[in-house]
Structures are given as C-alpha cells and as structure tokens.
Image 1 (cartoon, one colour):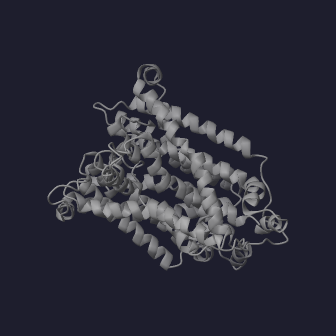
Image 2 (tube, helix red, strand yellow):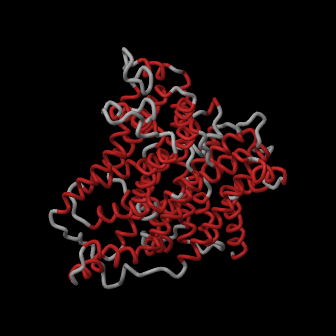
Image 3 (cartoon, rainbow, N blue to C red):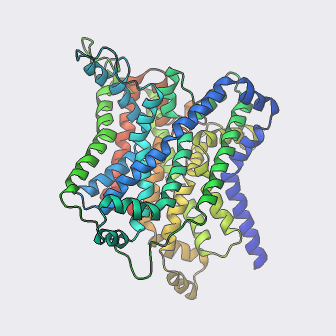
Length: 552
C-alpha cells in the first residue's frame, strides 16, 4: 500500500511538473547560450533600456496597494450607500479586458487628437496639448485606473474582512478618530497582506504587455514583455536572446519571492480568535455619503468613461478625428461582422474559454482535493508548484510553451492548435483555480466523507458523489473566472496563436497595433460586452464570488 501511494504521489508530481515547470525549464535551458547573454547584457542597449522601463512601470505597485487598501477598507468597514454595487463594479473592472479600455483612453487623452486635449486647447491660455497618453505617465495612468488598483482591492479585501472589527471599535471607543484607527490598528495588523499584494502587483507589472505595446511602442518605450515579443517575431526569430532575457527576469522574480518569504515569515497576527469576532461596520455619520460619492467617481473614471469612449470610437469614421465632415459611421461594425476572420476568432475564443473552464475546474478540484484530503507524499510540493504560474509572466509562459512544442518532436503537431491555447489558459489560472477550490474543499466537513466511506464508498466515489455536489457554487465561480480569462488573455496567447487558432483577444490586439483602431474598438466592445454579460449572469445566479475573494 505504501509503495502504491508513493508511486501515485510521484506520478502526480511528475504530471504537475510537466505542466508548471517544463515550459519555464525549457526557457531557462534555451537561455544558457553565452553569446545570447553577452548580447542582452552588453551589446543590446534596447534590451537594457526595456528592462529599466519594466522596473519603472512596475513600481506603480506600492502606490496601487495603498490606494487599493484604502478603497477596500472604506468599502468593507463603512456603511456607505451603494457599497454592494461599488464592490461589484470593482469586480467588473478586474474582469474587463484592459486593451479595449486603453483604446477608450487613447480617444480621450491622445496628444494630438484626444478629445480632452482638443477641448482644453480651445481655452485662450492653453496653446499646447496638456496630456499625452503615449508616455510613461500615460501607461501608468491606464494601468492604475483599469487594472492595478481594482486588482489590489480584490486582493486586499479578504484580509480586511477576516480581521476582527472589534479591534478597531475598541480604538474608536478610546477616542481615536478613523485616521488614527487606520494607521495605528488596521495597517499594522494587515501589513503582511499589503506587502504580499505589493509584491504580486510588482510581478503583474512586469508581466504587462498589451498596454505597453499599444501606447509605448509609438513613443519608443519598450519593456521586457514587448522586447521578448519583438525578439520572438524577428525574421529569423532570435529565440536564444528572448530566452536569456526571460531567464534574467525569472531570476529577479525568484529573488522577490524569496525576499517576500523571509520578510513575512515571522510577521503574522491572529485576527480571528476563538471568542468570536466582530464584523459590524464602523459608524462615521454623514461622512459616508462623501466617501460613497468619491468611490462612485472613481468607478466612473476607471470603467464608465473609457467604456463610453470605446463605444464612441467604434462608430468613428477615423478613430480620434472629430472635425471631419462625417465623423461617425456604422461601416466599422459591418466590416468586422462580415469579416471571416471575426467569425473564426469568435468560434476559437468560445472553444478556448469553455475548454479551459471545463477542463480547468476538473484539474483544479482534483488537485485541491489531493492536497487537502489525502495522505499522499509530497503534498506540500504539489501545493507549492500550483502557485508557480503566478510568478511567471504570461509572455514568458507563452514563450516556454512555444519552445516546448517546437523543440519536442512528440508535441510539434500541437503547434498553433486550439488545444495548446486551452492548455496555456489552464496553466496561467492554476494558482487562482487550485487555491479557490482548496478553500471550498476545506469547508466540507470531513465527517461527511467518512460517513460515505464507512458505507462502502471508495475515495473516487466519495469525491464525485459527496465533495463535488457540495463545492458546486465554487466550481461554477472558478469556471466563470477561467472563461473570462480565456476571453481576454493576450500576453499568454500572443506567441502561441496562429491564423487558424486566432482568438478574439489576439484579433483585437492585431487590429490595434496595425493602426485599425476603429475595427479594434468594435472587437474590444464585443469582448467587453461578453465579459459583462458573463459577470452579470454570475451575479444573477448568486455565484460564490465572495468566497473567491479569499484566494484571488
């Protein structure tokens, strides 16, 4: 029995290593060429500059963590009007594909044709454009409003929810104002969660690709991900340099993960205790209306404004030109909807999203059950390996899978296939899916499974007949989130997609970077509408996104 258990553990460990480690390992091995390292470190100034820009842009993470924490704290701790809608709105911002919103901001803040700049330059004391979206500050603005801050709100919300609010109430009773409570009680107790969110935000900042490609390339601003994309698409491809550059970033990320582990090892505080915990909101009187108004303004600026501009841009004759004789038309919609590539891309997106959602939830749930409920050896290693894809930028994962397929004869038949893209989405969402399902499995009483086994049911029967029905709400939630990831992902899929497997997200990207922004706005609006419908349906069905917060 013990030998059988060891063999099963090793087989599962090998399978998970093939999924999470093999793509990265191929990149690391491919980047060992000395000449490639010499080029990226000493000869290629563009690569060195791209690394510098990557670090600069990723440094938005600490500021986003602070802003996201304050917003999450206000949403959870204060009884502000409309907070359920506001919280869901930030979930929408988290789920929305960022490239369509970037197109909206381009229409508003472009240096030459941006609507806001044109309006401001009509004032007598303004002669030059005030804003320039194609700049470092423009890229940071788009990321902060459309992605980084909403992600921080989603990440930090669970830690605030799990903290006993009676600790804050005790400080209030002692005469401390809300600001003093925040800095002297809340932040010290949650500093580990804030630090973790900052590190993860920095890693996600290094992963960013599509915004930098769309806004940075015209201004000569290149980052690590766009540089890897250029090297991989060179004629002939410069894979060795791309892999060496990716290995360098992977080492940096590994160092960050190690530093985070050392820094947080002995910094934990018990905020959920046996005597029960308070969850009552803090009373702030009429100040809650002002906080609510500010949060509604943030939602309007981060989601509604670029969304409305995206709708406007999809009907423009020339994207950004309002002064031509006939600035609006429906021709863009007719052109896109009649395009055979659009129909093929829509079918591909459906296959990728649904395939990744269905296969992913089964894999995530099975692995979560093995980690939480069995005595298999190496469970800790399995748990650690399930987290690895979150430390691997999407462009690096895509490059690793591409190299693995090209350099492995058995896998070469899958080059450019939809199956490869489905696998890429499943791997990229591994940490989210496995940890959400671990939470769900952990909430199922062990005695229910023991009762079934006493009645003669085997472990597999218990899993299918007891565990799966009880974790169904979380299964559906994970399915929804993976489907949305499959619809909007660009950085992971951009190196893997071929004309026959092109999804809508890559079609949108190709339209945008090739200058067909009118068509890109149409496709972006369609993807955003699909994501919005999926999210609203999830909310309508009462899916367990609240529980998802604890692991997202």
